[in-house]
Length: 145
Image 1 (cartoon, rainbow, N blue to C red):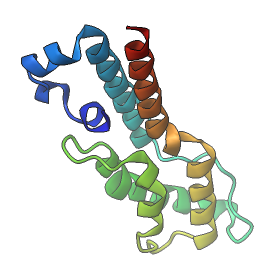
Image 2: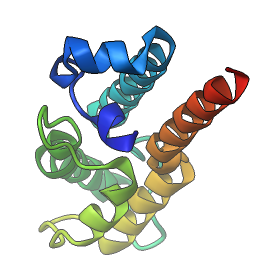
Image 3: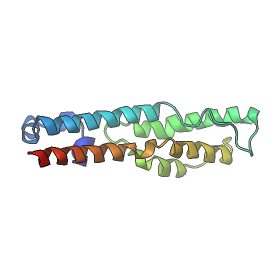
Image 4: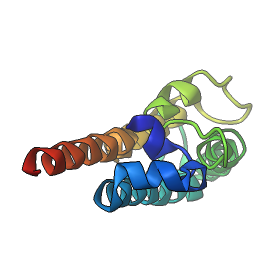
């Protein structure tokens, strides 16, 4: 089920769709679309850009931190989240970001605050929640037959 939700809908053949039935196919398609919307929302804007500087950073230096963070997000994170054929699973974003080398000019404490914002938004678990809701909906449908 998870593979069907994460696969492009065009990869589901007509015969496979007929075997699934309209109701199950619609559940899969809607889950797929919700995940795509979440990916675009998360990837489009670097989280934490409105945060105040960390105690180890100044207000004037923080504008540089925000610029660097936005570049790191777009160049090293968002493109992975938005990749059309092999996207980074949202639950893997935190590990991906923490695995990146610290960019020159970004205050390490500001990076910590930016990462905390990524976690606090609650969006990293949304992909799994969508998949679980779809599985539950399919199970409920089959139970009703």
